[in-house]
Image (cartoon, helix red, strand yellow):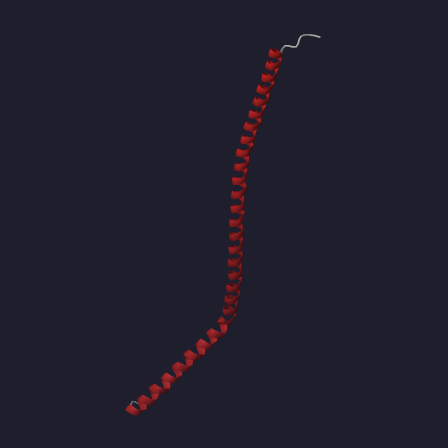
Length: 115
């Protein structure tokens, strides 16, 4: 049997351990890098969730504004449809007031003796 050198065996073991240590350190470095990337990804996802929430709130606010505009348009249309009636009533009231003033003026003129 070929000679078994314990020093050589020790060197192989030391080299193997050093190689394993180096690989473990590389894996640790890789895991640390992946952890940093995952943290950045988490921050980005949280940012996107915040943007989505704000867009949802903005959309709801727009929907409320449009509903209010529809109500106002309905009220304006109702007022505009009544406008001719109001105008006719206003003309009628104006003529009535002028007629009453003429009658009062004639009465005063008669009492004073102008007519």
